[in-house]
Amino acid sequence: MKRKADKSELDSGLLIFGMIVGLIIGGLVTLFKAPASGKAFRQQIASETGQNLRTTIEAVVPSDPLSESMEEGKAAARRRLAELGEPGRP
Image (cartoon, rainbow, N blue to C red; front, side, top):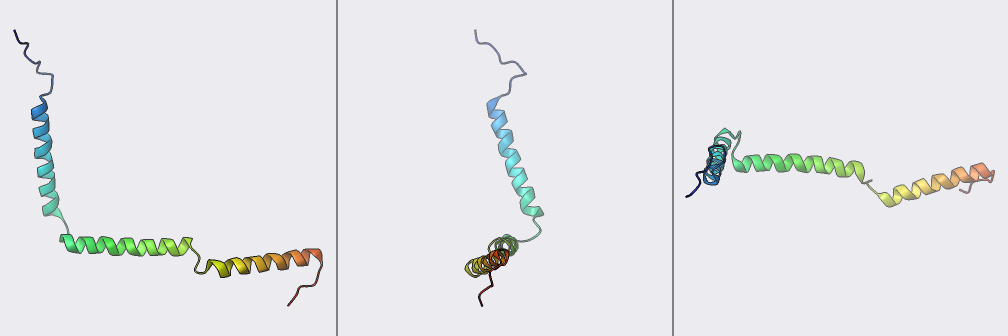
């Protein structure tokens, strides 16, 4: 004799069906509630991301790292020469 499933157990078929229906309804709602067309929205996201990325890169990476490093080294050498009491070179 087969045992009947308790009502407390979930039916996997019903669960999958409910998930699929939920995904379809969510997709349709998102599609109709979108503030702009897909192409315009992608362009807006790309321009905002590009501007933020450029700003971040400019803040992190110096414009000319070699010349800035050279200037820092020269300044450190001048300070050290001044500490030692030796006259600086032109």
